[in-house]
Image (cartoon, one colour):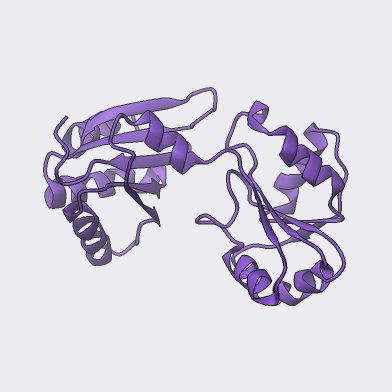
Length: 225
């Protein structure tokens, strides 16, 4: 019986690749990757050559049986394009199916944009909620932000550069002057943490349009800076 390894990969800086992750990727007979082209570049950088199979949001359902069949006799590693797989990334259905089928699921911890942004934010970390990517429709977005903002816990979400201004404007309206941090390009050359309120960050990013990968950390309802 094989094991399903969940291998975290760098979110920017390749030096964040762990020795254990490299050992697993070097030894498994098959790697299930969100984007095989992206993963091939990663493997090539570290001098590894392993068979790859595509597993992304649009083919996960039909790839399950193929990968589960491989798990009957061989180990399989699951990776996403960056960070920890199956966290707001493809792989959740595979992990659930592997658990139901009785295959061991082994996490190989490593880089995570969520945790890196959270612990660097200066906001409470003892309890937090991760929202993934927020809804696109304005009504649903307002509802999610209002519900998250009513809780005392810090909350974290991913946002794209072209939607950040809209989200900050809605947050200013729904949550008021709430402390938050926009973490940009974590571990990369232009890493930046911009701190303030929804209104002040909206002004900042109107003048300096955001680029790259964004993770937003927002204070809970009772946080006093």
